[in-house]
Length: 386
Image 1 (cartoon, helix red, strand yellow):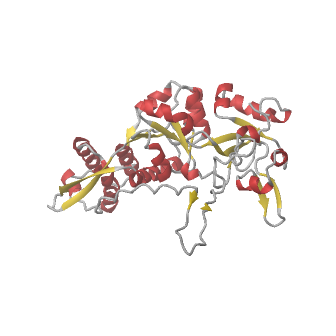
Image 2: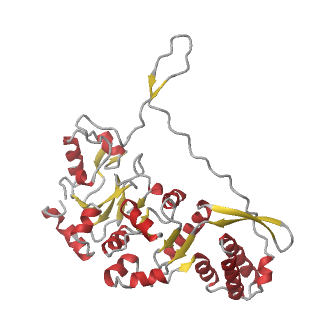
Image 3: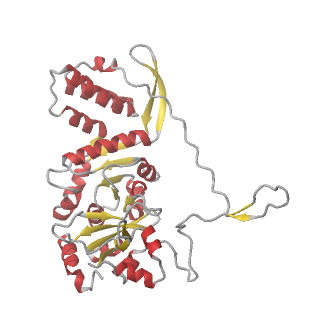
C-alpha cells in the first residue's frame, strides 16, 4: 500500500521529506493505513479473524455508547513495534493530516502490547549494543530509524515519557553503559531526571560498609552502571541532527556528560547561592548520585565539583545526613511455569488428568495452516507485503 496505493501519496511524500530510504522502511516495516473506517477490519475478517480478536490486539476500537466497532488506525503512516525477538506486537501510527490529533497514536495496552516493557528498535539494535558496549536511549521512532540508516545501530527509543524499570532490566542484558539522548526542551530535561531516578532504583548495586564523618557505620550501594547524558542543541533532536549533519552525532556522544556532572549543572542552574536552604536541597539531591559512583577517585572529584558549584566546603558535604542505603534483597528468578500436562494430587479415585489451558494470546499458538493465530504482522495490516 505505501509504495503503490494512490491513497498513500501523502505518506510517500512524508517519508521522502524525512529522508527514509527503502532499506530502512523495509527493515523497520513501515506501512500505511487507508483512510477508511473498515478496511483493516474487512481484510482480517476475510482471513478468518473475528471482531473480538481484532479488538483484543488493538486493531479495532469500539464506541461504548453505540456498540459500533471500527478501524483504530486511519490515514496514518504505520510503524511496526516489535518485541526483543522481532515479533510484531503493536503499532505506532503517525498522522498524515496537518492538524491531526494525536500526532502519534499507539496501539492500546493489550496482552501483546505493554509499552512499559518494550523498547522500540531493540530487536535490530541488540547486536550493535553488545558490540559498542553501550546503548543510546532516545525518544522517538524516527530517531532510531535515522540512527540505523546513518550507521548508528545501537539506538533504542523508550515507549513513553520516561524509562521504566522493566525497560532497563531488558537493556542491562546487553550492556552496563547507558547514554540518554533526550530532547533539549524542558520536558526532555524532566524526562531525563525521571529516567535517572528509575535507573538508580532498578540497576544492580554492589554494597560496601564504611564509617562516615561522624564515625557511624554506613552501607553504601555503588551503582554497577555507567550513565551519561547527551545535551542536545536547542531546537534539535537526534533525528534532525542525523538528517542535517550526521557527522555531528558522534561528536555529541563523545561530549556526553557523566550523570553526576549533568545533574549538578541542572540543579545549580539559576540557583540563589545566598539561599542556604536551596543549597542544602541541591546537596540532598546530588550527594546520593555521587555515592552511587563505584570509583573512590571519581567520587572525590564529583564531591569537589559540587562543593565548588555550591560555594561551600567539601568537608561540610561529608557531614550531610542522607537516607540510609541498606542492601536490597537479591530477587530470585520466578519459578518455571508448570508443564502443560499436569495432575491433581490423587484423591478418592475420581481425580483425572487435567490439561492446563494455555494463556490467551499465546504467541506460539498456531492454526491448522501453521500460521500464528494471534501474532499480528505489519504485512497483514497493510494488506500487501512490502
